[in-house]
Length: 160
Image (cartoon, rainbow, N blue to C red; front, side):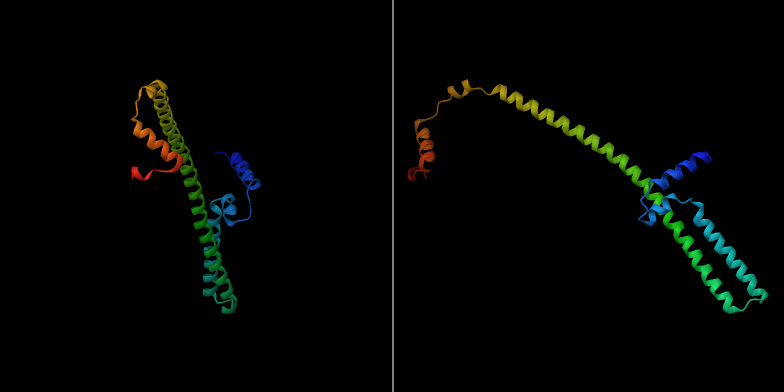
């Protein structure tokens, strides 16, 4: 990727990002920045060790520098770890989204085929059943009477 394209992409990311979370900030900062922060802390620690060996600066002035150095290193390590997680999560999310689209498409095709098959079977059954077959069927008179009685007032006591 060229430097110009990288700068344009970075500027676009900055312009279109919701800045309400730390993750949004970690997406747009360069990946070398947390490493640079940790290197600065290591360099400051080295300077503090040199000052300790020279004994020119009293311990009460070196102690805050040592504490600040440790905090800066921890902050850089935190940023690096968090940034790696966020970027890895972005890649996994894109991969899963692509897979989800494929699975959804396959499922839609599968059920569309099933629906088509079921509709064809229903249409075939509708063609096979007609009213002529119903008129050819002879029901016994006792069944017709029992049915009519049950519709009018429930099942008669004798049928039970």
